[in-house]
Image 1: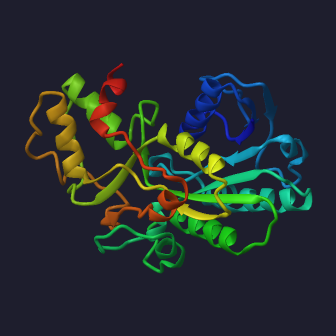
Image 2 (image 1 turned 60 degrees about the vertical axis):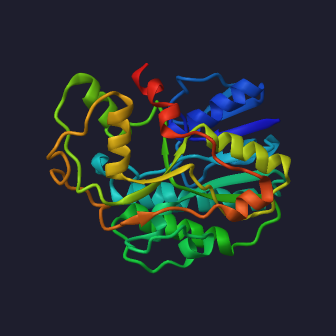
Length: 298
């Protein structure tokens, strides 16, 4: 089995690459910088903004994964041109080049639960809910991901293309400014915590569940299409912060909620219905947050 991953040193791409290492798969990596936290067979230094991107080397891979995204972390203040290029233009270009080159393997891209937009509906959303949502989009990241999903759902191709909508992914390598590592490290260091009101609900999945799901998709010969990866837990920010405090033997401090502002608070309830993927592959997330908090501390 040979994998090619476009995007090096990203949170999700590293988790998938580490899975390939564990399984002994051949692995090619494409990006600007060499991978630092896993082994690989070949590294191809490429500028993914290059309109003449050479995709011919991908043809020998059983699985090609586009694991690049921009605009996910609002605090990075990424340029909107970068967001639309990396989230839409480049994956569309690769899709069309693979089609022209008569690729025979499996191509994987990722959507996001954020594509649902600013909704207060409290239910698990289907793939069609996300694809057809007209709820207000709070940022360019949401708009760009919607654009890619609509392209994937519409274009014609002969190779297998899976487009997986993902909920909030977490794990010990994630950006330290994100909710879970921020909370864990502040508690450990006795630092003051600041959150939004904490009422928004999010679905969570441990990042290392994703490569296991991909393996099941390959094993079960999953047809092309859009699929939700349903997370194990769906909680409000208040609930997840409280759970982390209790796990670490602390009480949640009074006054920490409502003292911070974020752009995603209008998206009150974001959770995926993974029935379609579960019925096709048997995939079901298994990790709870409390199973892995110790890994953040180590």
